Length: 126
Figure 1 (tube, rainbow, N blue to C red):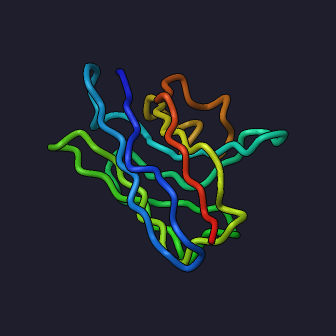
Figure 2: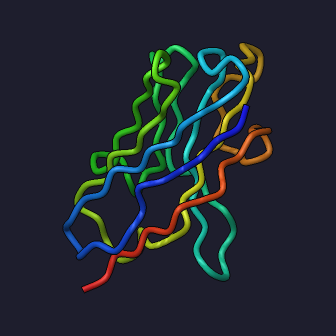
């Protein structure tokens, strides 16, 4: 599956952005999907994930209540709605996909995900 992320940009603190990730090829509805982010000098970190069915979602603590991950299997997209953005949310955001594996479950580790989009820059600054 090929993934393409878009929707990043410059936003003021307290603002919002909606990232989208479009998938082509593969069987999108069988993939667990996630968003990660990476800031300069930092390791890539987990942001949010959603199971193949959309029935389960997971968030890192610092974005819980502000970010929402959702997917549209028919449209082959996974979105990340980001509200109440903070300067510390500034990063390149990547969407990622992994074949559903009941033994492994939906993961927060980057190594779990075999498919990655190219990243989209989010900058939160006044």
